Length: 391
Image 1 (cartoon, rainbow, N blue to C red):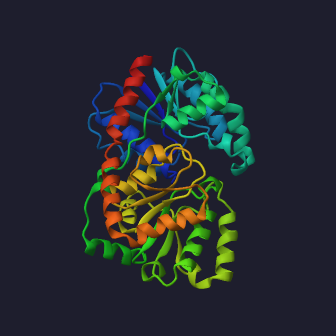
Image 2 (cartoon, rainbow, N blue to C red; image 1 turned 90 degrees about the vertical axis):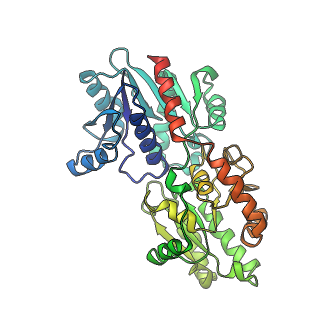
Image 3 (tube, rainbow, N blue to C red; image 1 turned 45 degrees about the horizontal axis):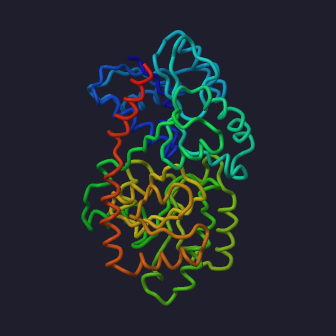
C-alpha cells in the first residue's frame, strides 16, 4: 500500500501540530509494515528538505520519499498543487489535517485529522481570512473524507454536534503522549545548569504553546499578578516567576497579551519583572523546561487534546488546568482542575501546588501514571489499521 501524508507542519515551529506529524510519521516508518510512504511538503529550500529528511533517515524499516509539491501558496497547494501531483505520482491513501483537497484522481481514499473545532465555538478568536476558509471548507472536507480522525472523545462529540457528521465515520485515535526524553530522570545539578544556561529562575510556573487568543494568556497574566499580590507574605509565592514559552511573532498572536502585560508593568513593575517571555521553545529543550518548572498551567478556552499536560506529567511536573473542553478527559484525575475563568478558584488551587509538598508528590505520581496511557506507537498502529480498513 502506498500512503501519502501531508507533512507541511514539519520545520514550521508549529508546536503541537509539528510534534503530532513528526511522531506519527516516525512511528509509521519504524513499524516495518511493508507499505511505502510519500511525504508531501510545500518546502522548496534544498537545505530545509535535507533537514526534514534527516528527521527520518534513521527509521530503518520504513520506505519513504519526500516530495516538494509546488506552487506552495496555502489554499492553492491543497486544492490544486497536491491533487495534480498525486495524479502523476499516485497513492492509495492520502492523510491530511483539517482541510482536504476538493478532488483527487482515481480511487484515492482520503482521511483528515481534526484536532479541534475551536474556530466554530470561538470565531471571535480567529483571523477573519482563516475563519472564512475554515467555515467554507471544513464542512466540505468532513463530507469529502472517507474517514475522520478525532483526537479525543470531546472532539468527536463536537464534530457531530456542529456538523452533523455520522458517528460511524469518525474514529477516535488519541494523540500519543510524551517521548522517552520527557520520562527520563535528570539530576538537580543538571537542572541547575540548564536554568543557568537559559537564564531561568529557580521557581516558576510554565506555559508552553501558541499565543493565540483561545489560549487565554491574559487570564494567566492577571491571575499570576493577583496570586503574587494576595500571598505576598508567603516566601514560596514571593520568589515565584511566570515563564511563557511561545512565539510572539507567530500566527494569530493575541494582542491582548501585550495590553495586559503593559498594564502590569505600569501598576506592578516588580511583578512584571518576574514574568519572562522565553520565545519559542525547541523540541530539544522542551523536556528540560518542564522538569525545571514548579507547575504547568493550562488556562485555554478550548483544546482538542492538550498534549502539554501529558508532557508535563511525564516530566513529573504537576499540572493545573481549566475544566474547559477536553482537559478533564485527558487529565483524568491526574491534574489540579479549576473552574474555567474563575480566578479565585485558580489562586486557591495554585497555592496548593506551591505550598503543599505531600499533595504535590501524590499528584506527580498520578500524573506520571496517566502520561503512560498515551503512546505514539499505539497512535501509529491505530492509524495504520485505519488505512488498511480503507484499502
